[in-house]
Image 1 (cartoon, helix red, strand yellow):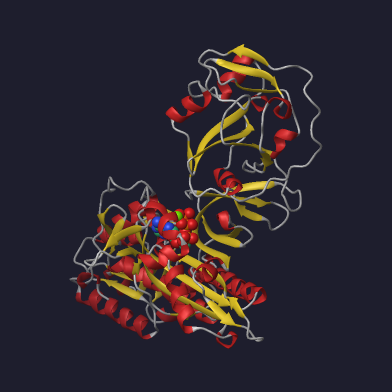
Image 2: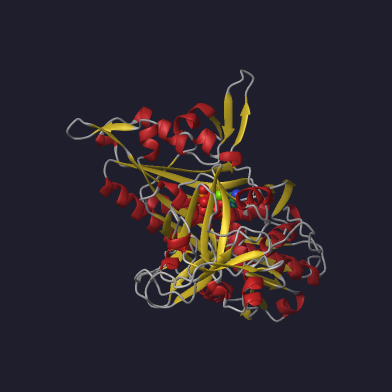
Length: 577
Ligand code: ATP
Ligand code: MG
């Protein structure tokens, strides 16, 4: 490919719309353009990278026994009504009607469609197991589409669905997908980690997320420095054991705390540590009022709370709700005398007493509160997020925190969909059984963004050779110089003959301009062909990631080039071609 005939509209300036580095660089490197909120056109270079990612995914999926198909983007609402998700999925599901007034949606995911297909086609244990996947455009009307390809509304996903006859088979399918994912992210040259993930209200199932490690990641991962424990902060369970504390010896006492709304204000005003002040957080869970209590120095984990409540939706109570439920303004809620539908407390609150809480009275708090004696707690649960001070829940080792971007998610579904949609088969005894399912997603377009979040510098993207739109660029420095042209074209032809993925920058532009563009787009290898070098019978090869330059003799260019190429591949943990 010649750059002069190609289309990479790079930008000199940072676009104002971009908040994160991958978004900024995808726009500046001419890889994507925004059409409207959360919806992008993949320009040729961006699309080329996406195709490469897809090809690696395809190869590994095939290796682990998954078979590709392509399902429609438009799905009938009736299928979603069968599983109850027409209502439950919420506003992310883009619903519409056709000319006959029938309900449809644009698929945010394909459990319903695949289960419908399989229930029609599969009837016997002999036809199982089966794992079907597709690479396809999804639509989710995200509440806050942002960060470019990281959280789009329209995006590309690889989604696979496995069907097995028993738990052992389902466990095997899951393990294969786990292996396939490890292999995929290794072959993409990304630094990543598989972590235990939240399974939501379904419960009982198993789930892992694949996180690309990057400081800019939205997800926090808790890992152990001694064992291989790694979990999404949302999920990481907190170890909490010990006997219940004896009753508090002092009765509750109301104290005046004028204008003290936050834990730190109250603790400061009363001159006590923050850990003695309880946070009483009020929520609207599926329309019911809920109070959740954690120590003042802890963070409530909303995912854990949602699971404990078995709630579909969980939202912090509005100012009006707080006033109605507590009889006071924001910041004075407390468990004593609070009239809510349900009140839950974190496990560690059983281990101590003599708390300071809001008094449900404006400008007042209660001291010496004993939760058991003074309030009606409905249950104690693991409700807070793990911290560096907590022991590892597996081995009591030290917990570390890292940031990551979720690029993949694998999930044991069990019979959730096969039961509600009657995807049944006859087992060896001729008895009807629901198929046991798993689902496995990779955010293909998010992988491209994550790769950039992980690998970039002030000059632009530093692509891994596996993801780069072209692995190599040849920069012809003086394209009007016949000799330079000829040598650049020769090298180009030789590399093409060897199967190297190469772009020839034959644009009639100044060298500085071209160097900047090539660094911006982030081609891993840059071959510089200039008049002076040709005279000395050498060309220069630059490694994008290290900036290191190698002068290679023209005569034995291919051997030298292979060595540099290998160095670059090794840097990204890529071994063979
Ligand atoms: P998130 O928590 O980020 O919203 P999710 O749990 O909704 O993700 P899944 O339903 O498991 O995501 O989808 C599978 C994969 O699709 C995710 O691991 C992620 O990589 C990708 N993905 C999900 N939502 C988006 C989005 N809005 N834009 C781009 N990729 C997405
Ligand atoms: Mg989501």
